[in-house]
Length: 174
Image (cartoon, rainbow, N blue to C red; front, side, top):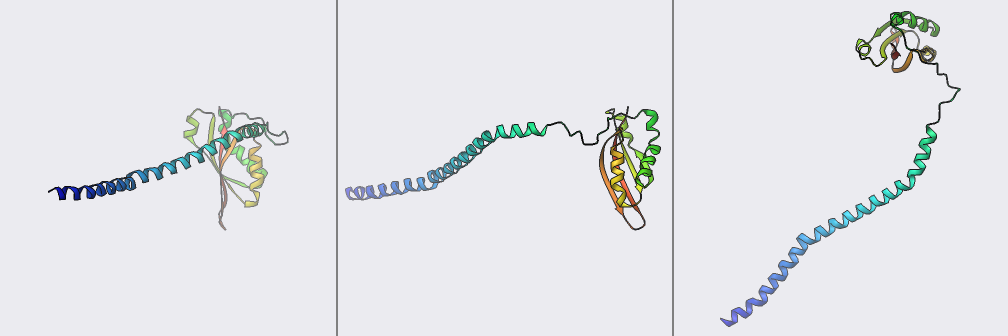
């Protein structure tokens, strides 16, 4: 009996050592490897933070320069809102614009939802008939109007028999 006890002791030590090595290989090493990855990601992020802190004053300076007042050479009429009585004359106003651009006014459709919002803007869908080459004078004439806030959408159809220019325009109104 003494012999079996002495012989099992080295086998037990070898089994414990093998179990310890297996534990290290299966549990500790993957965690160690992922910690190295996290350390590498942290160092990359720290480098990016340092770079952004170094570039922040330059960005602030460029942003301040970009806020310079618009050029006086640009055409920008004083904006005035349309009165209710002029809003009823939208067709006449856009007919005059169409005539100056060499186009024919097809329709003017105000959006009732934007009229009721009370934000001072009225969306209008305007359709002109004519050649595509007349778009630039048309846009220039529309933008020069004091009651026009902006042109939101331009749609051009160049079908052989149905050449049209559809504009979605925001107008200032009271």
